[in-house]
Length: 305
Image (cartoon, rainbow, N blue to C red; front, side):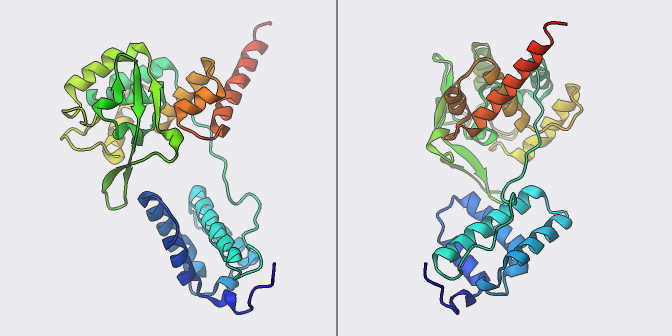
């Protein structure tokens, strides 16, 4: 590689970052989030200088200050990932010789293990939640379909004879509150997921009582007939969780985690788990299989006193 032009890196960082983000092909919600992270957490430190002014020492200091200021680790990781990607493009553009983002481990963080509910606990929450959201709880736990995918479900997505639901789209919400349906993140996200026969009556009752009319009507709607929103559902979720006697802080996503664990325990293969989860990579499926194999080892170790 030839040495970059000594003056090439003198381009203003903010101008370069703005052009870099503009030229990337991104979904609206992703673009909005990336723009927010760059504006709030990257430009205040690097925006006024040049691309060449971004050194490894400055990146290390910047990251340390963000963490010291109490910015959540997932946000700091996202900011570092964006800065790394931006500076990699600067290397490709021959503005700088090498990427200054060279901090080991700064591009990921360890996600705390989510709690796994028992089947009785899942039904206890379903019994406690307001009736229009009962099926939302049960489907999440026993199909592992994501909240945004459930919010975008239409009546025609159910095959009641085949006992399956087809995920074709996912709901996204912009910062200004606008809702829209989009294609899943990957082709693996479009999938048919079988549900237990025990849920058939629950689905039939819900479609009769709560779903919007017509084959294209949303399966889940709010109490006033509008689209389901995470923010509107959150209070109902917390009340139901507490009413079910589960006092530990538990996010709704724990239901999906529970369903994935149940599927792995039931003997689902890596490919089967990937399909149910809507993942194109085997990484997450292998994590669940490792978790359940560890549990099986613990059970075996207790069989003989």
